[in-house]
Image 1 (cartoon, rainbow, N blue to C red):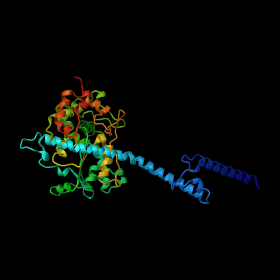
Image 2: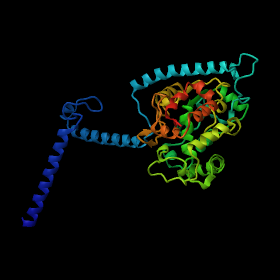
Image 3: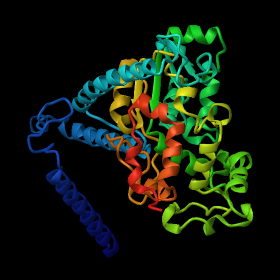
Length: 416
């Protein structure tokens, strides 16, 4: 044999030996004990099976299956809004949320009756608040195949449920991930607006769903999303909100108007600048100016959907809702809602509102309506106590209906 052939043979034998060594190491360190009397996917000990001629092939098949399972899990994890719970956790969530829901429905009825409102009016005396003459039929999403009707309170967990509605309406995860359209646009294509009397009939035959949030947290979220930065998120309408609201607010409530940069009328420690986001144009309204506008405006006639009071938009005193969920307990409530609506085979609990700010995940469920994020503490420091209490008066019925307290935010207003 020629020397070069000998060298090739030696190299080949060495390579084969290395492969055998690697294979033995893999077999020796498998973390789930497949070759140490562990159980395979069918519950049979792999040691017993490996005595068969096909044992090694079954082992290879098991590795392939596990790799495919891991890839599937990683793919799901990439959709970070999906929240996974065990069956035991789900059972606990359902028990808790069921009790909460019963309490919330009862509270709404009691508050509406106390103020002589809508379905719960009991005397000829004038009601304490003016309501629309009928429910706002056109704002609902009617999923008639699943007998569900949802009133979308924007900036109160609406994005998560819009995503679920799109899935129920036939869109795929890929379509929702790749689209440039807003979820509300897609959902409206799947669930067009209904007018009276078709809408009234759909409501009668549906379980009615409402998701609320601490009114002050919702207002801050609306401000930050729509008015604080007209440069970032322009494709989602911030330019429109600046033209319709922002510029006018600045002209009315800022001495010198837009000629005075926003950065000159608010301190850096009273705002949050999200990393990676384009800086604002420096002519947008401050949170204080936005609040001054809300205090002065007639919310029944001129409020935008993102900050209109709950009692005017979803009219809980004119309808008997079946489920009232809260953003603060949205994980538990979603598990309960999905089960109560019979949708557990179609959708999963999710949260599509993660915005990191100073260590907080803004808007994430906290299980406590009294939790005030670090970001919120900064913005509410722009307000005086008098301004916060005046704002509370404009949304007082929402606070009462859904058991929220203005006192949660009072410690963070300006002492001046």
